Image 1 (cartoon, rainbow, N blue to C red):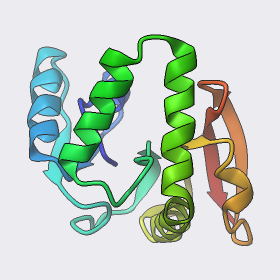
Image 2: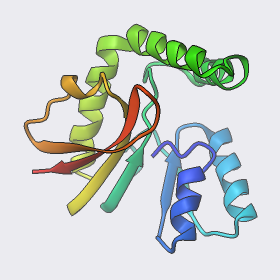
Image 3: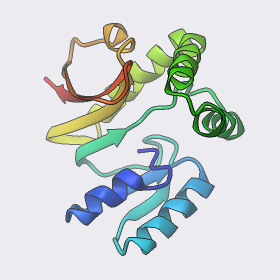
Image 4: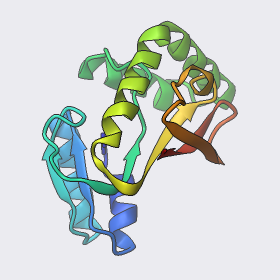
Length: 166
């Protein structure tokens, strides 16, 4: 979900998995298609705003949610440019991520909880949701219908979390 350049989708397809990849940004989908072709893997790619154009059920859903789901594509690209090109120092990147998290605040928590609730409808019974989240997101999630476990720390303030529904 939100494939971007297709890195995760390509990684999974190279390991023999059947992969569907979606994005709301048509330029990102074009980039992901080019990268899939360069890596000689087959990935089903389609335009979708989160689950809007999805009808299948999956064993695994991967999602690296935006810091602010209300950003438009231009704002998201500008922020990405800042983080990837202007803020080369890891301390400044970390500080910028904390500022972005603070500014998105309550809306981010609502978005994450809504996304997790919707993901349940698109997973097979034993399906797993993997998400790249801030450590600060975890206490704010409504954990009454799922369990959450940290799988791998990514940065000082983010990690990959496995979500299993009860």
